[in-house]
Length: 107
Image 1 (cartoon, rainbow, N blue to C red):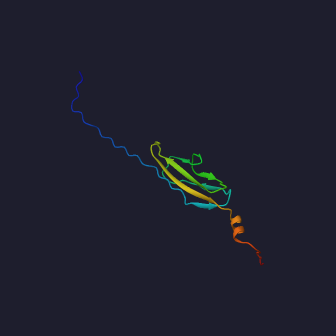
Image 2 (cartoon, rainbow, N blue to C red):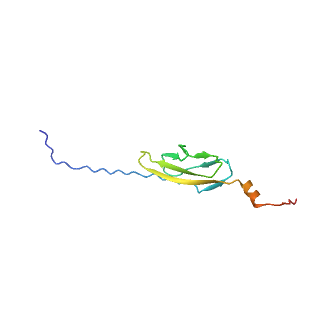
């Protein structure tokens, strides 16, 4: 027969740090202009809304889009998201729309 004598409970404290992520401010680029979006923070892995896994995200978008990154802690228990909007504007078209008529260039 086994007899337990004076059993004391054991206390274990586990601290899990939540990952943090910060993306740059929203940005404006020309169509198909290469841009690198670098997620900053305490991240173990980064998964982007376009399916890319890694950091930084290298893109050359032809139209405005929102990109979301979700970073995961080392033990995959905690996640943190952030988003950036990359607005694509063809400034050549914009200038053409604003100015109609004759333009005189003076040298």
